[in-house]
Structures are given as structure tokens and as C-alpha cells.
Image (cartoon, rainbow, N blue to C red; front, top):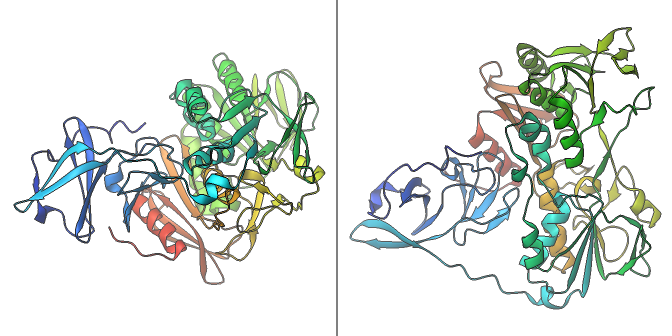
Amino acid sequence: MGEEAGKQSGPDLGLGIPEADLAEGGLLVGHVGDEPVLLARRGAEVFAIGAVCSHYGGPLGEGLLVDETIRCPWHHACFSLRTGEVLRAPALNPVACWRIDRRDGAIYVSDKLEIAPRPATPAAAGARRAVVIVGGGAAADAAADALRREGYSGALTMFSADDSAPYDRPNLSKGFLAGSAPEDWLPLRSRRHYEKRGIDLRLGARVVAIDAKAQIARLADGAQHSYDGLLLATGAEPVRLTIPGADLPHVRMLRSLADCRELVARAQSARRAVVIGASFIGLEAAAALRARKVEVEVVGPDAIPMERILGPEVGRFIRKLHEEEGVVFHLGTTATAIDGRFVELKNGEKLEADLVLVGVGVRPAVGLAEAAGLAVDRGVLVDEYLATSAPNIFAAGDIARWPDAFTGERIRIEHFIVAERQGRTAARNILGHRERFDAVPFFWTEQYDLTISYVGHAEGWDNVEIDGSIEARDCALSYRRAGKTLAVATINRDIESLRAELEFEGAKASR
């Protein structure tokens, strides 16, 4: 990941470049020794930071300059030019900053700067004595880290029902399942990170009840934990098939790291796989299994895969892409039974399979919130600050249904980056900052060598405007309703995706 972005290129900035080579709003990638460095000019100031995004190694020099920040073209992480600090997920770690010297009409980059930690704000210093986070995914991890970064020094406990520390869930159906990403790439942070920051991470710990009035979280083992601030980040649960044979050993789902480990183990000896479900998880997994030379057949109820999300044109293109890789589709039908050798379909077909992957969607895990008396409607209802209907309880990630400022509707989104960004906002609001969550949703899918980026949110549209060619893999699609663009999907137009995000934010930028 990101090997090309990290290669030494451009001028040696230690030797200097003419000031005229870096125009206002300009970006220039060079190096100091073996380290790639990005120069950026904003007005009279020049900044020098690491040129490689700390998430997957994206090339920041191909990104978008917005005020005193740089946005990564691959997955829309955002960094401060002044401090290198991560301002937006999915990046977790800052990039280095370098000293600038300007003399005799030239710009020189010398040694790295030591950036002092941000001092605690009064709100962070005294707002809470004990914070509990229920969940161990993207939102939970981001919130725990943000609480410490904001200067909160009280008790901080994260209860995760998972047996693994927070990990990069998007990679499960992509590189890890395909065999191109080793498992040691998956953890978001080391166990040492949690220990060093005083985050009490408890794995395999299931919270079974929350007493909102007494402010107590009760665990399955009978223990109870008091809090004066709580974040619900319980995520989503996979929809399970209820057909005969759905509980057979070779029928698997893909939601957790444990699920993926089992799939990887079975894929090593599997000859034929049937994927039930033709949306993102199902098709990403199909591509990953083909990378392992497993024969794959995909079953889905819709006539065109992913039509409801990306439209018929993209859906047909994705089907063709998979078919060129040997995948066989059975669309407009569903599975009715599974036995040790076959998957039987509603249309009467029988598909041979020694591995069955079920990816038919997820549901928000709202049982805990509902039992606690929180307002629930197709998710946990929160306000623009991610606060629930109960005092001192916030919600983030797949379960949170919030009022979207752009569409004016309540929405709930099951995307990893949205969860990370909500976790950070929720943490700040637990500390009393009253920060609105207004980040524009972003996600991406990788299937074989195709990457599609999607910014915004369109649950329905009456028109899709296509600029460029889907077949040529050079296009932008605008999903519009009543003349308003709600979302933009791009293929090989990273800067356009960033600009679409910025336009949704109502901000101004230059490159």
C-alpha cells in the first residue's frame, strides 16, 4: 500500500528551490535525504510536511489544498499544514513537519520540527470523571483517541464484544481476504497505544444493559461500571439467512476479523464458492476469492448489481468486470436451501459449492439502546451533536441516525470513515464542545483493479449525469434529485472527488 507514493522524487529540498517555482496555492513534492516532503504555499507562508498520507500511503502532492490543510486524494484524510496533525479520518497518525528557511530568493527545507502537544482545554480538564465507550470498532476507537488528544485525563474504558483490538474493517473484504494484505496490517493501533494513553480496552466484554438514570453500564459477567459520559458505538449486525442449511459449517459471513480468518482458511482448499448477495461486501469478497483462484458464482435478487446505490450504468459495468474475471451471476433470484454440496435457488437452479459466503446486509445493533429507553427509529436517534435522547449518552457509527444538514433528512450510514469521523465529534461533545457533525459522507470500493470513490449521500435520485466514460474508467457521476446534486461517484478522478466534497461543504479551495 502506497509504495509508489513513498519513493524519492522531485528536487532535493535541502539544497533549496527558487521561490518562483512555488506559486501561490501551489504544491511541490521533493525530498530531504530519503524522506519525501511536500511544499505548499498559502499567501505569504510556505509549509513543509511529509508527502505521504499516514493512511495507506496516499500521495498528498496530488491532493487538494484547502486553507491551511491538505486533503489526501485517495480516501480524503485531511492534515494541518502548520502542525501535521490529523484533522479528518481515515488517517490516524500525523505527518511530519519540517523547518523552512527563505533567503536570497530561495526556499530551503532543513530538519524536522518537534510539535508540542495541544494543551488541554478547560472543558476537557473538568467536564467528565469517567467515560465509558460501548463498542470496539471505528467510532469507538476514534472517540477514545480523540478524548485523550483533547486533554481528557479521567477514567476511560472501552468495552468491546470483539476478541480483537480495533482493526481496519474495510480491508477484510479487500486485501486481507484476497491474500495481498497480511494480518499485521489490520490493527488500527498497537496494544501499547491504548496502554500508553490510559485507555482501558477490555476485549470480549459484552455490555448487556445500560441504566441511563443511574448512569451504570452492566456487563454479561455481572460487573457494573459507573459513568458520567457514555458513547454507544455498537455498530451493525449481519442479516442472517433463515433458509434450511444456513447454519452448516461451510456457510460463512464476513463481518469480523474472526469471520475473515475462517474464510481465508476455508478458501485455501475451496474449489467452488457461492456468494449470496451482490452488493459491496459480496462483490468485494467475490473479487478477493477470485484472486485466490476459487471459482465464484454470485446470487442476488436485483437484475443489476448495486443499481440502487450506483445506478444501472455502473452496475452493468461492474457485472461485466466480474464476468471478465470468471464470475458467474445468478440475478433476480434468491437462495432457498443449502446442503453439503449445493445451493438451491428460487428459480430451480442448483449451484455446487464447498464454500458459501452470505452478504445480504446488516442491521443496526440497537437492542441495548432500545432497552435503555433511548429513542430508536431505524437506528439510534441523535441530534446534530450526536447526543441521544438520554442525558450524557451519545451515539456514533453504524447505529447513529442523525439530521443531515445538506439534505435536511435523517440519515444513517454504514461506512467506516463516517464512523471514525463521528467518533471524533462525539468525543469532543462528550467534553462539552458542542460541535455539530456535518462531515460529508465518503466511502470507496475496490474490486480487482477498479476503485470507485463516492462522496455525499443519495438514497434516491431522479437523474444521473455522467461526465466522461465508465468503460474507459475515467468519469464522474452526479446523482441528482429535483435539480440538486446529492452525491458524486468517480473513477480515476480523485481531485474531482475532493472538489465535490468541498462543494458539498460550501467551502472554497484552490489547488
